[in-house]
Length: 476
Image 1 (tube, helix red, strand yellow):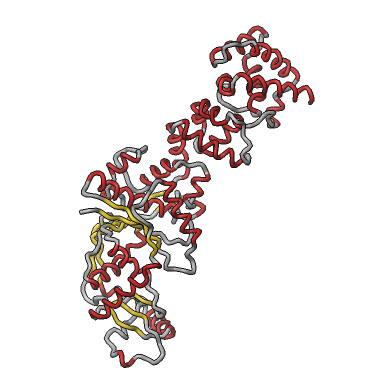
Image 2 (cartoon, helix red, strand yellow):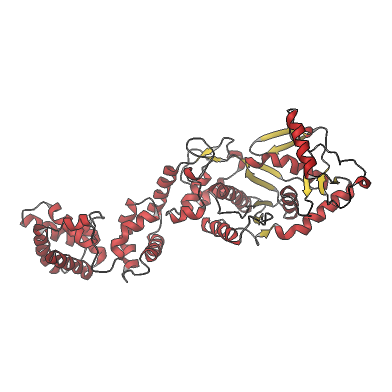
């Protein structure tokens, strides 16, 4: 049997972190069965029936977030709103079979019904007054809602792959509305019809939907359709155990991208939020697809730890290909400096990336550390760097510049040997030469090995920056 999963976000905002994890689990489950089972498909449905809150911008943000995370879906994304006629057709089938009925209760009657139930300490449920009433009693000029004629006796059981068997007495549920008075389908109806028509075999979603599953199961049974297998995963909480909110980092996926997180690092982190494979922490996409199953999803809420995500991202940056990181950094710096970068920037970044990435945990941090490779001469210097260029330092720079200008073999080892030899002959500690060199060559006081920096910059650029620094020092 081909396994079919789906991700069904509402386009009322960005793709939030909880939704991204749900999408990831659905994608991995389908991918696992595609590669190691009888087949798997991962579908995307946009649940845009709430027209007042659904926006094209939100749809675009969700699709963009999914693509950035590498969670490609099979086929075209489906719009739930465009299937309203199919949803209404299913209700006509229920009416014909006697499994649904028209309810003519006014809003005032429903309010009074709830108030009476509340006063008695009962659950606020619809009392079924139109359940078996003769339609001839219908008030004139009133458009009815259509309700499911749910079973009143017995239980409804969900054999959940994460939560285990969960049972609810049918008397605890009332006859839910399927079609509103204006003929628009409700969420509960649309989800069931769409999942059935999309041949969804496994519904993997947050456990805040668990209570919906009982009503949806009743609807599947009333329509005579096979119920999919449910798996309700615990929600993500903040480090303090409270429900995840913006103060915990519950941002859109686009925000994590803008903060410099790599998609593979975020995927790895979300995978481990509620799922485990022994003591494995760093898990490649290929391993995740091979290992993923729902039996390893825990029942307790996972706690989001921004620091742990950041450290994991640093690990991914250190293991990333230099060329890929160079492209990301170049793009980031082009945006920051309106495209005004040194022509040699991409080449310098690739050559200097080994050292740069050892010091960074995000692409943003990596880009900030790499700025000096991309800037056009003369460099704008920080106040701290300028303070390093006092008269003594400028004198040392002038002398070491003469030595370096005569260096024929512009390699790290030769550059280092030349600078050290000068420091020794001038009876100076190496730092007395290296720090002014760093200020002159980078415009800052922090950088990778200054000898490596000179090698990456190349002879002409390095010597030119030293001459610029001497010129600045002379003017000041």
